[in-house]
Structures are given as structure tokens and as C-alpha cells.
Image (cartoon, rainbow, N blue to C red; front, top):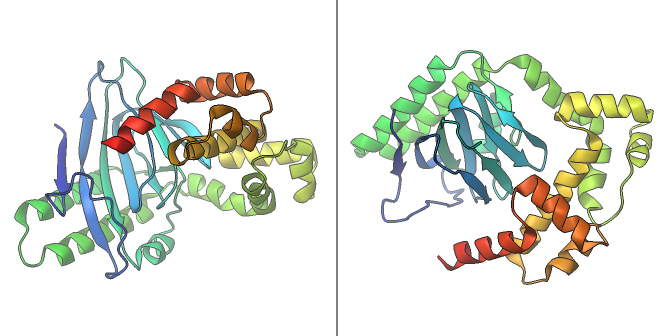
Length: 286
């Protein structure tokens, strides 16, 4: 299947809108396919919800609550105004279905379907999901007087089918984040501080070893790596939205040595902070 994209407002390049005037509005949808020679790396945030469903290949996803490779049948919904990163390994093919949506009842529908945002979930049966994505694409092709209602209803059916086909084992792991609520909140509200795993474990009344085990089982990575990713994610936001020098941003996320910060940033982002600053500056101009 070749790449296709459909936009609600055809004269707008991104259809990146938040609108609460309707229960559900589909901003845009499509299918993106990349070959072995294509270099794919996206680091951004949007005003709407962003659902990605992997059809072929694999890609790495990084957002404030996860970092791991997704496989065919995996999906994630990024919530509005959440910084996320995804990239395709070179020499691999990759293809995914996608849809951006907004509306006053989106969160309630996701809740009813048992779909958490910013979590990688595995779907046990992909065929119904692909079917409803294709039906959603068809609504953009017809574009009759019932287009808005038709696309909203089709998206609702897509989300319902995702809810029915989620591997509940992975969903249960996501529910376990409630056990870590206090320590996760502390990490994100103290991003400029040096945070120890011992501190976090004490907040949850657990031993360090037990806390680390539960954290890894639930979040898919160690507490130490999660803290690093949270700091880097915040640094990305500061680089994109402020004119502060890299040295100051390094201090703001808890690294007194800017050279160490740069090495750490480059390791996880595959690009240096200064290069990332230049890249995002060009994107803002365009």
C-alpha cells in the first residue's frame, strides 16, 4: 500500500487544530510508507490527538512516559501538547496508519474504550483496525454533506474496535502506573533537580529493588532511564520554544556540566543540542 493523506481543510498543510465546538472532529488521516533508504525522524507536538497504528516494520517512540521500539500491531495515541519523538531504523521498511482528531468528547470516548494516551498498546487482531482506517479514508474521498458526521462516527467505531482488541496484559501494565503516581509526578515537577531512585522508592513506600522492578515492568525502562528521558524531553521543549543558550538549558534540567548534557542528549536523540536547535529554528521559519 502506498502513502496517502487526507485533510479536512485541504488548503492547510498540517490541519493541526484543537476544536471543542463538536464532540469529535477528524482533522486528517492517512497511511505513511517508507522504504529502506528513507530517513525518518520526527520530534514535535500537536494541538490534537495523534493515533499511530504500526502496519509494517518497526520504529522507536519516545515520549514523556515511554521509550521502546514498536512492532506491527502496536499503537499509541499521543495526547495534545505532548512532545513526542519517533524514528525509523535505517535499512528497514516501515508503514503505519494515522489519524489526528479533536473534540469535547474525545477523552471520554478513549476512557470508555479503555485506551490510555501516551502508552504503547498491542492490538491482538489488526484486521478490524485496518478495515476502519480504510473506511475513514473513504469518508474523505466522498466528502458529501454528511462528511463531518460520517468521519466522526467512523473514528468512534475505529476506537471501539481498538478497545475491544487491546491486549489486556499490556493494558494492565499501564494501570499499574497508578502505583507510581506520586513518584512520577515528583520527577516531572522537579526536572531541574538531581533525583535518586531511593527518593522515589520512599515516596511509594517500597524498597529500591521492588520499586525498580515495578517501574521497569510498568514503564518498560528503568527509573534512571526514565528520569533521563524526562529531562531530555523537557530540554527539547526549551530548545524549541526559547532562545536560551544550551548551557542554561543544561542547568535547567539538572546537568551542571553542559558537555555531559550534550553527550547524553546526542546519545538519545542522535543529534547534538546545537544541531537540534538549528533544525527546529528552520522548522519554525517554514
